[in-house]
Length: 361
Image (tube, rainbow, N blue to C red; front, side, top):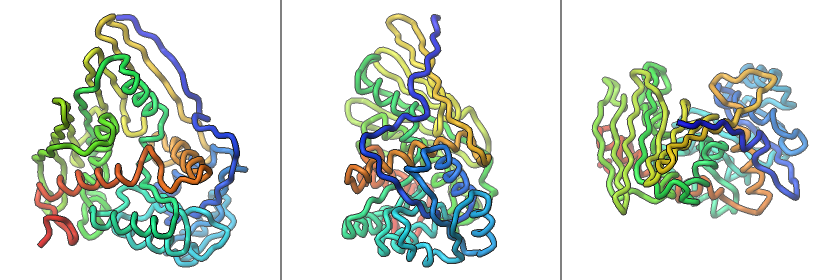
């Protein structure tokens, strides 16, 4: 089978004409916030500057600020919200804090990018999005996968129909993380769907144009703590399209994704949620093309694989705000609602119900 290696999109994938700088505030000094700042550090510093970081602990905030050379550190999120030098806040806190923190920063007229899941259910998400619209502010759920060059290549291939119509999606995300406190505990908004299963659902959604599925079927297990350990999800779409998704916090697997099209297939290499490589096979010729889009290194080492790829999300947000947009078309408010609906349906189907769910008393 012929195989070609290509490198189509470099690290400066997102470009723009008029360049308006963003002044970031970082809410929470945990691992994902660390990695987000690592990603920002690979971008033009005249376009992205981190002005301040806040954590519940003054010591943690100061240590984070010193490591990343951030000029200001705060021991409360309220101080960060009141800082007039900040245009936009990145929220990297635990899941249960997303709703109150989004509201805090929006009410202080700050644009918001909040880590996924932006909210624990559709009701909470609607509350956040409604407030953002009322305040006329940019607000986006940080599903960073959507902004990787590999995902853009997938969207281009599907739109062009060069290998026919996308019909089937398969994605697997399994990692042994269910014993981690933030995943294990219901009180912290735990569960493997929020942490990793969500990525399989957003991928299927993207392939099918972020359309809501006509059917969501779920089978899986809860832990003794009452959160989801993992599940098999089937999403059905019009015109015989479907997605088969598997996630688990109990064990590891290949963690790849595939898209079956009428005249070929796309394979996204592990880690499919932050990929640097993929291949496209055209059935009629038997030819397979490989594509590689490496992420840059940062001076400070990130915690997670390919985390400097958070730069793509950050620069896309800057451009959207520069263009006067209040949401980003690659992760729109509607897409977040459709994703939250799937996540809530999966949880409820397994018996994991929280206050405000459609299935709650």
